[in-house]
Structures are given as structure tokens and as C-alpha cells.
Image (cartoon, rainbow, N blue to C red; front, side, top):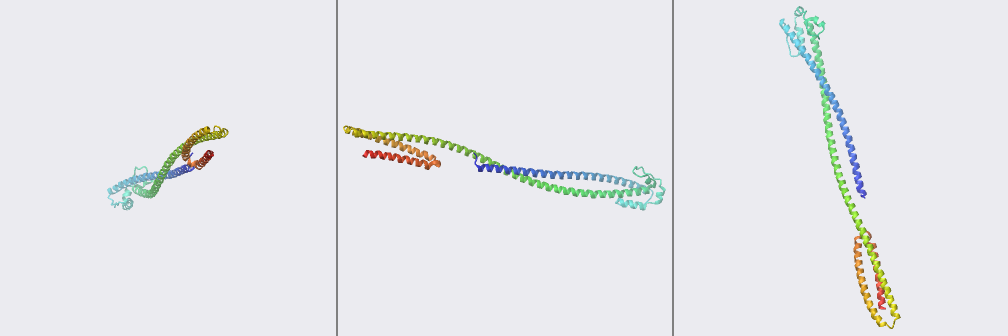
Length: 329
């Protein structure tokens, strides 16, 4: 099972990642909406600008037509020996033309007709003078309309520049947001790598804990087996003690065979002493092995095992002292 600190760290990183992703999604949607609105406005202004340019071209075409007609009239007036002072400005040219034209010439040419279908019949009836006044008025109207369109075009151009500036600012903001998004993405990647590393370490620790548990179970089994062996040796020692008691009773009851019995008894005592020494040696080896096993699980039950071993040692020494007391007796 994973430690609670690792689990909490993983959950906390997951929440942070999800929160950052939701913030980035909201920022992207807001940025996309703003850019979409600005692009729509910019497209509308571009369309208006194209319409204004078309109208301007149309007006310029009309002005050129009027200038051509005026040039034709000036040429006709020159053919009738009229002195005209033509300037660069079309409006002043028309004014001076109207002031310098000879009224007799207009009277003599009162039957002049123009084939332009856009000219009213009343103007055709007025002759050249009517044409000049008509085209002067039309030129003035076209110039005013051109000036108005120029101002409107200029205003639209300023608005387009303003929108372009706003679009540039939004692009810069978008770059900043993308930079912060990339930073957050890199941070999330680092956190994910850390979580992956911690998960692998956690799995390694879990496997180590499982291995230690298996070793502990094995040591417990070995310790249990050692305890059974010690109990068996204690039973054998008790049996030997009982046999010694029987021998004492036999010695007391058979005084006639005392010497033989003493020799036999001494021999038995020697054998028993050797057996006891051998048993003590085996016991010491078992105790040493037992102590080594206890050291392996010292972190769990060292003090308890040590006390149990100590009690067993005291009991064995007490029994051994009883045997020695019996020998001396």
C-alpha cells in the first residue's frame, strides 16, 4: 500500500494540473473570442474602405468626364477667338471660363446641343452657357462629395490603424499567454516526471517490504523450530535426572553391591558428565544460533527474545547446580 504522503502529493499535483488546464482553456477561449471580434470588425472596415475607394474611383471618373467636356468647350471657345485664362484648379477654371466667355458667342450658338443622355433637356435648351453652369455645379458637387469621401476614408483609415494597434496589443498578450501556458506545461511535465519517479520508488519500497516480511516469517519459523529443539533437550535432561534419582535409590537399597555399584555409578556419572557437557555444548551452540537469529529480528522483538533466552539459561543452570549438589552429596 502506498504511503499517505505520496498519495496526497500525487492527488495535489493532479488537482493543480487540472486547474492549470482549465485556466489555459478559459484564456484561450477569451483570446480567441476577442481576436474573432476584432477580425470581424477589421473585415467590415476593409469592406467599407473598398466601397469608399470604388465610390472615389467612380467620382474621379465622373470628374475626368467633366474635365474632358470642359476641355472640349474650351477648345470650341478658343475657336471662336475667346480669350480664356486656364489655371490648374478645375473649379477656378470653370469660374474664369464663365466670366470670360463672350455673350454674343453664346447668343449666336444658342442652338448648341450635347448628346450626353445624363444632361437634362432644360440645360440643352440653354446652350453652351447652360452646359458650363451645369458642369460647374456638377463639378462642385462632385468635389464636395469627393472631399467628404476623402474625410470619411481618412476617418476609416484611422479606425483601421487603431484596430490594427489593438490587434497588435492582443497578439502581444496572446504571446505572453502562450509563454505562460508553455511554462505551466513544462512545470506540469516536471511534476508528472516527479510523480512517476516517486511511484517507481514506491513500488520498489513495496517489493522490499514484501521481501522483508517473507524473511521475517522464515525467521519466525526457524525460531519456532529452535524452541522445539530446546524443549526436546530439556525433556531429555529431565529424563536423565529421573534416571539419576532411580540410581540413588538403587544404591541405598543395595549396600552389599556398593563397591560395584560405586564403580558402575562412577562410570555412569562420567558418562552422564560427558553427556551433560555434550548437551551443554549443543545447548551453547543452539543458544549462539538462537542469538544470531534473534539479532536478525532485533528491530521487532529483541528485548523479549533476550529475556526468554535469559530465563532458559537460568533454569538450565539451576538444574545443573542441582546435579552438582547431588554429586557432592
